[in-house]
Length: 171
Image (cartoon, rainbow, N blue to C red; front, side, top):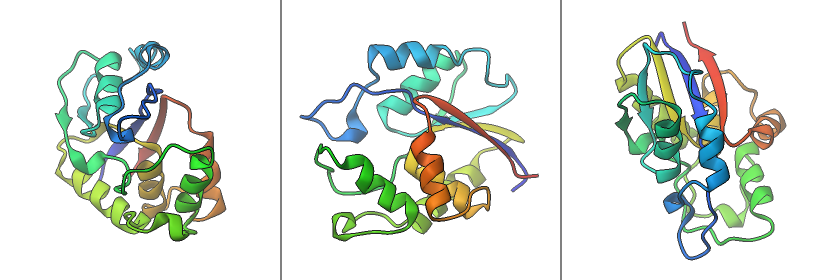
């Protein structure tokens, strides 16, 4: 793969305790922040987004261009995750590669990264923009050697903004 990849971590969602996280919409603040990305994405890029509403809405707010929706760019596949005070610690453990019993049924970092890479391989163009999610993009960055696995990857993940742009040159 010889591409310049710009990852767009989705903007802040409106937390809805009745719905699964993958169905959440952007909050008003998130929509405003995503609009702040206008003009920061290259005009010549191939655009794609996860099939989760918050990713597509982030990209729609950032550009008027058409984009492909692809489930392979979705967040880590896992059972419905209950909203809890320790959700960040649970996710950080996954990103660190230190699964616990709470991660039973979760996709592994390697599987998530491979799924993501398959999606990228099918996108045409030398410059691609993908609106996606924090855990899966971190797993992919580890898989391509852009991040060191373990604590460094977890620190990177914990510092991601909502939204955020990460550029990786794979040439």
